[in-house]
Image 1 (cartoon, rainbow, N blue to C red):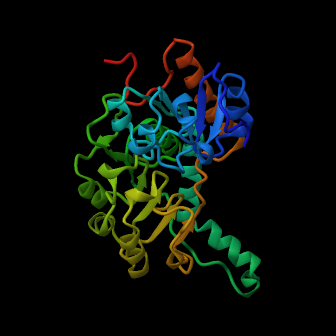
Image 2 (tube, helix red, strand yellow; image 1 turned 180 degrees about the horizontal axis):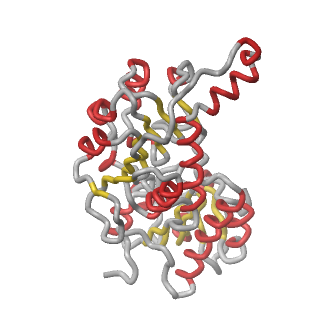
Length: 323
C-alpha cells in the first residue's frame, strides 16, 4: 500500500481500510491527500482524515467515524455498501458514495453464466471428462432452462440487466421487490413465498444488511420446490446457509449456484461434498475492466466532492444536496 502514516498539514488525509485498487484509487489520490492505512491510524493523524476509501472488507461503523472528527465523505468500492453504516454517517453529516451502474453488465453476465453452469451442470461435465469417466459411458441427461420461469429477487439496476439477458433466452421473468417498478413490464409479486412457489429459478440480486438477512429461508426454499434452482449473486447474508444446505441435501430444491457466502472466504465445507451446487469466490464484478471502472468512480466521487461540485453517486441515506 502506498502512502505514509504521517500527515501533511497542508492537505487532508484519506483513510484506506484496505488495499483499494492501488493502480487506480491510491495512485490518483496520493497527490491530493496524505494516504493513511487503517493500521496506521492513531490519535495524532485521525483529526486530519477527511475522507475514507473502503472496499467493504472492513466495517466503516459509527465507532470508526467517531474517531475522525473532520470526516466528510466515505467512498465505497462496490454497489453494495452494507459494511458502511450509512445511517450513522448521515447523522454525522458524512456523505457516503458507492459505484452503481459501472458493474451492472459484468454482474449480469456472470449471473447468466452461473445460471447456465448450474442448470446444465457444466462444472460436473468438466469433472466427468477430466476424471476419464466419459470412456466408460455418456454423461447423464440433465435439467434444462427451456421449461423454467425465473423469479428475480430485487429489480434494481443489475436485476433489470439480468432480466434483459433472460429475455434473449426466451425465458419468462417475474420479480419480487418492496414495491412494483413503474418502468418494468414483468409481473410483480408482493410476496416472496408466493413468487418462489410460482417459479423454477430464484435469482437473488438485492442489497445485504439487517433488513434482508436470511430473507431466503427454509420456507422460501420449500416453496421453490424439488425442481427449483437458487442463484445468489447478491450478498451471502440474504440466504440462510444452514437451511440451504439442508434443502440441497434433502432434495427440497434441485440445485444452487452461489457467488457469495455469509462468512467469506470461509465457505461451509458441507457445500464441498455436494454435486448439486456450483461455487464461485465472489467474482461477480471481478474483471480488470470493471474493477478499474469502479475504482475510477471512487476517485471521481471523492475529487468531485472536494472540488466543491458534490458527489456523483451518493447513496440514498446521504443524498446530495443535503436535504
